[in-house]
Length: 190
Image (cartoon, one colour):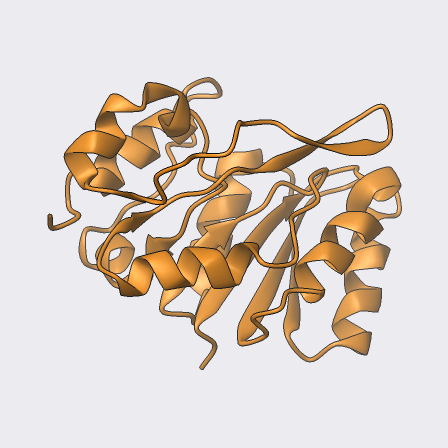
């Protein structure tokens, strides 16, 4: 069983997908599984996902009808086997040490977060400034509202997600990430 399950919702991102998945597979911490959830892509994204599954046993691919990013993430949550869950958007590239750094923080019983990266003009840019303090208690994290807008850049404990039956709300298309994050954080022990 892997330590970290990395869930990547995929929809029509053939331009970025190789770079995204390559960056995940290049992690310095290697005890991961990568769940590529093809959400009904109409370009070559699904075939690219299948190529990765053939090349690397850590990659598992799921093809589904288009239902949106929340339904894709929920399928990933249902299929994840790792102790920790990490989300990466399919048009992002992550730093090679992100899994290891997050896990190190998590093992110190702190809510793990870190800076994240996005694509701008075909170059990878740091989107959030470095956070000087690497560890936050749940109540401190709640005060960092900008960090609650997205699910990426942090680890989630799968046991909490399963125990509390946490899912992304598929009935809303704006703010669903924030809702999931708030729901999760209220179950994190301080």
